[in-house]
Amino acid sequence: MADLPRVVRATAPPQARVDAVQAALEARGLPAAAAVEELGQLAEEAWVPGNGARVVARAWTDPAFRARLLANGRAAVAELGLTLPKHHRHLVVLENTPSIQNVICCTQCSCTAFTVIGLPPDWYKDLEYRARVVRESRTVLREMGLDLPAEVDLRVWDTTADTRYMVLPVRPPHTAGWSEEELAAIVTRDAMIGVARL
Ligand SMILES: [Fe+2]
Picture (cartoon, protein in one colour):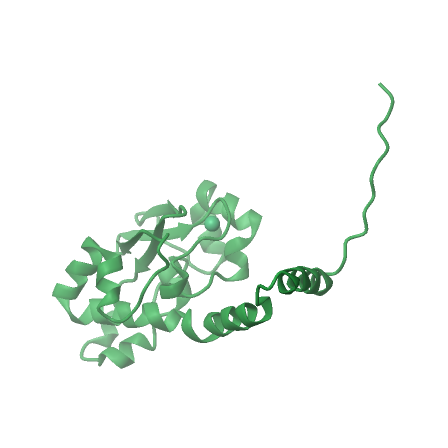
């Protein structure tokens, strides 16, 4: 069979492509610029790990809330004024213990409970991380600075479109007596993804 001719297309830089899509939407009467602006603002101000940190701090200090959170994450975070998009039907909260470490990932793409734990960091979306965290989780965590003793049971959870996860980290023993606000200040996005301990 004869070789088919190769089609070579020059790819425009991202900003030029964004501008083209935006112009096409605007031409059809869809206010793309306003939507982009709004999304940018939400991403920077509303979808931040500080939300999940408040949830964790409440769970550490209020056993009844903790029980509700573990039973139905979506309903429990609503008590703190936090909502998830409709298609995030379930928020499953995974409780770490000294002998269990939960880690979340999205092998398909980049799904997270972003309105609660914040938008995913770049490494979470990286093809290599997504592949390796399920195959050689312990090694990946060690490379990220979390060297778990062999007796710690490592559990990796793969996000789907409608089921989102957040990790409830172990409360550090030195925080006895701290206020909810002080506790929230030490909770990090990485701890809620499960690649770090506090
Ligand atoms: Fe995804």
